[in-house]
Length: 195
Ligand code: ADP
Ligand code: MG
Image 1 (spheres, protein in one colour):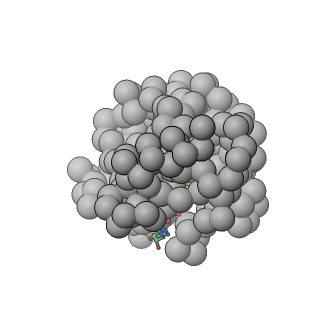
Image 2 (cartoon, protein in one colour; image 1 turned 45 degrees about the vertical axis):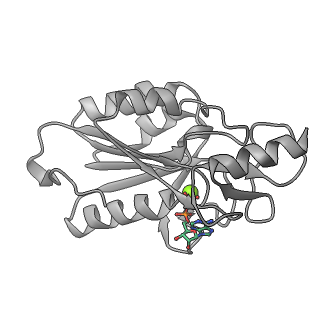
């Protein structure tokens, strides 16, 4: 489990960036919510954002596959986060892979300004390629946590998101019917039968 190096409190002088990554169902959203709830317990001012295009479950909440939830603000562009972060101490961002590349500068600007920034997102897309701005976010973060799901085929650890339906677009919102977590071998085997 990730143990915060410190929580900062109201007298924090410097900010930092944490990235939580992994495949679908690996528990990124749960982990993001856990960290943000602890910050709230510490009476920190918390703002949470997600991309406007992620309309699964709820428009103004972040909800995990396990139904834990937290209020959030949907935004269409990464730069909107700068405008809306205000005087918060902690900024949480979910589904960061869907944001434009400006998200990298946005996170740096927030952290440079003294905020703790916690970013969760898919590190790979359904073909196993690095997803959107995630590689750059991983590079600039002070703390990186890679989570694993359980392979739906083998019960091993899973780090790939396998798409069960035939759709080639990189962004296809989906759930259990459309995706399953797979180990490398089960993912490769599945990709072979698809082609
Ligand atoms: P993520 O944000 O990474 O997609 P969530 O935090 O929303 O993941 O959901 C994690 C939860 O999903 C787990 O606690 C578990 O209850 C559930 N779950 C469903 N399928 C799986 C799987 N194959 N491996 C692990 N957890 C799974
Ligand atoms: Mg999630």
